[in-house]
Image 1: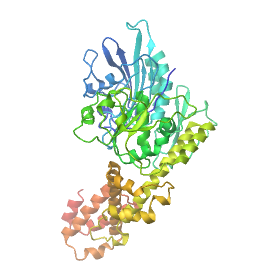
Image 2: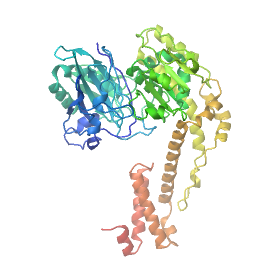
Image 3: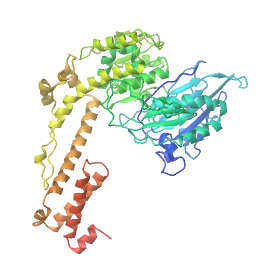
Length: 591
């Protein structure tokens, strides 16, 4: 039996295969293919010589020696090094069929525009991970197959999808279709699948697409910033005229949150607070799949607030940050760390929060909820499942949510619906917390009437924490959320977290750009002839240069400026340049 596991969008420090990083030029070979995948790799494992990259398709995709990994005759990476693709597609494990994801390299909340997503299906021992220079975290299907022709009795091989897109569930579905056929028919099957993907339409945000592959049509909706959160599972598009009927994926990127949180539903609110405050959290799980999915579920529960901390869905002793994370000479970093090795319980005993998860239960009744336990009860190897923390929540628990989910289980409500209920609860909780901050931040914006065309735009007022806390009496979260508790204490601690810093920097940047755009509009609406009457040529030239600079920024979508304003600014520049002497006109507008 094959099983799939999900992973999600991750952050990267670099890009796999730099020469081919990013989509290819329209009309170039494999242009449509590269809009979805960078390449498909096959990694084989020789039990005597080691692992090696057997195939890369398309063949012109370039991988560096560091990314490919050691040759079969080289030794394995030592702890602390950054393991490569070939090495990380397999790991030592007992014989069984099990899913596994690869881990991630998260760069402290900085999202790389060329981040890579890797999906792996292994045929052989349960496999693991990918290179540290690439963002990875794929769904995987792993099988161990007996083969009498192999000396030790097993044949092992992995199929790897490398993509810039964090479409976890789509790649999981794609692997479940492609991998079994590939291992039966090998290269010809892989070439046929890649040619089919090369015919797919581009993944345009906001569109619902039908993607044919191997006789199956996958219907997917490409997420967009304009999408509104749904209180229920996404509606399916009509497919009356499609043969065969498409397989509808409810999401290309979101995990089944209810399935991930089943053992910790009683503590979802506590975990939400830990994530909000950027607290260090160690997740010890029975498998890489469970570890990866739990970490990614935790990092997604703050939407629409951007997760600005580091996170590693699957972390091992081979990661380059192993020494940094395990040191006791400084406080633990703000990171969510997913592991499977009980060794980390001893190594990270100084961490304030440890979530130990047991073996996943079969779908059906709600599994036994893990209990809150004191960190002092942590043991080295035989630690029982539990949430080991001394943290006390600021908000009271919402018992109604758990009752609603339990009722859903009794009525055999689909998991997608349960996930929608859970996501809606977390969304409303986060919005109730963020809305007062948004309102206060908006009040720091200078009034539009204070923006004059020929003076420097006024500065954004400083964010004063005490003023904000006082404003909560009349416009606090109690207006939109029924939960009681110490909201003030939660905000005070939030101010010290990486999430407040990330949120504030982003909002301040957006407001500064808005101010600059309003100032440009004010200049374009002013009477230019009156202003120029008593101005020197130097001042006029300075105006032209500044207007051009802002035009370049606005055209690069760095300023929220209307198209009509841009046209007026271009006309202004032409008018001003035309009023200058010929020699200056030549300098400002060379032929």
